[in-house]
Image (cartoon, rainbow, N blue to C red):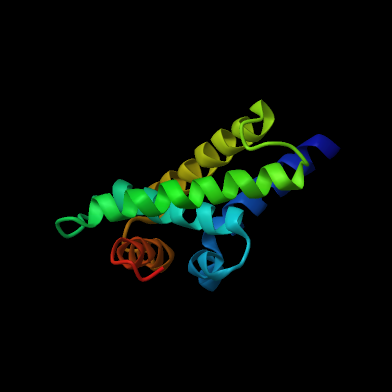
Length: 134
């Protein structure tokens, strides 16, 4: 019985993390590089899943932002674990977090659609990042 309750708690926390209004976009404004990277990932995933095109030249700029944000997140995670950024556990954590963030967005879009305010906020964040307004 306790396992069932924990599963529901974890699922509700995961859904709440994607559905939390202002925190979805605001996470990019935090000083934590891991949170910033995850917010950028969610923004890009929402843009991609909803088919929101970027103006010419912005796709490459957004890709550059994502690469730099991932580098900073990898370094931050390595520092927390007192190891190097190339440590297999750190790289595994990065890969796992990427998959989780993309899955959360895909599930949210499937459940609520692209016109949901939270999804629109994420697409707006992708637009700002691609314009260099991070």
